[in-house]
Length: 591
Image (cartoon, rainbow, N blue to C red; front, side, top):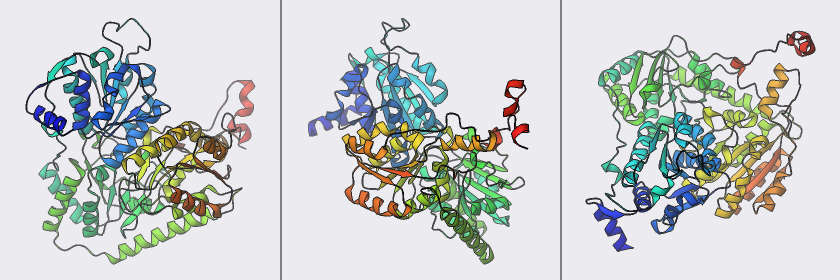
């Protein structure tokens, strides 16, 4: 082994003869790739054969969609770009949804995409698809290997773009190009990419500081970029210097410690009213590491909270995101931590004495107490058999502070946004704005692989569970002790709520009949529990945590206690023009 490592180290400085498969694998090793997710296929078997010797674990899933969700979460927790692979054609196209989700989540990822062999391209042969075309709009870039001599060079390019533009990159390689010989360098990442980012234009920093030091009611929004850049501590220093409340961006509840006196909670759908009221009155908003997405800043609880007249300072690593959704007074293109460090340093120079606004601190504290009381009161309302909010409350009380929690899409999963609180970063792994169901469980598996010693739980509705329960087999096979918390209301509840509010309780396609999820879990080798009383949640969670085995909690919750519709902005009351449908018109039943 020592001899092999010496040979590889020497190759950094001179070209060596390799097979294309060896060149690819050595590039993965240099990129610190520990796991690759996918399903075995003949197209890449020559490369796969090298993984054990290279120290790379191939993690076989049951469906390729799960592979990219796992890689997405692994990246968010570890900071290292995840890698997925599948058989050409259907194996790769099965990843479309999860790669699209990672793209909207700004998660660096490399999709190794074997394609039809060069002698047969264009013949519509077995498992042939134009994978580059399919993935062009859901990745940051598609990199094509055009010759075996360039397999490593193209893979280095894929990693460079994935990290630079924060998203997935397709690395498309005809399956015959894994074979043969080539001469190339084995380069360290520092030789072909850099993670160092600047802190933005000094003049923009000056302008931002001027706005902040003169602000009467500054508010900070901390987002995913602050987490990825390890800049949350500096965000806290800025907040303390200004006595500025800090909200977190939609579904990034780990972007600021919830126990900090200036933390006011999340904005966006089912966020915190304490955050919304604070933001509503802001005269200056410092948005760090967030694109201020349209969905993440929509009114909620009938509160149109995003300020219309405040001066906005937006810090983002991607110039495309500056002022994309909201006009800004100052846009700063830069790394969230580096920019926050410069802002804080300049603030200290221009405003040496930190503000100490006692009345503002008291107001923040009062709003948080009122919101917390409202959440608890709502949770303590009776449900049949369990109020879903009560189940969320009991679950958050039972899980240890350092738990990583993944959330899916759906009525209960989104309501969790109001209840989830984190004091550490890289703890909240949410499906985000692509909004696909079936995300949370495979994401939890990836998060657990990234941080093996942390407790990991997934919050999932029974609809989304139907799309991901097959991966319990993966968890059992690979001994990944994730807790699946399945909120079972026997419905696609988010859509059911739309049918309640807009379609006079005509439930078409929204009711679900399902097997006993706890028994299914047991048959797959996992722990399985059925829970119908809220007081049983804590003891079951405690028992599962002690056993450290894959577990499924089938939690029956009330299907009539539903959160508001996701998209009131995109729904309208129905009208019908043909006589045969007029009885369905809102004008008839809405009177």
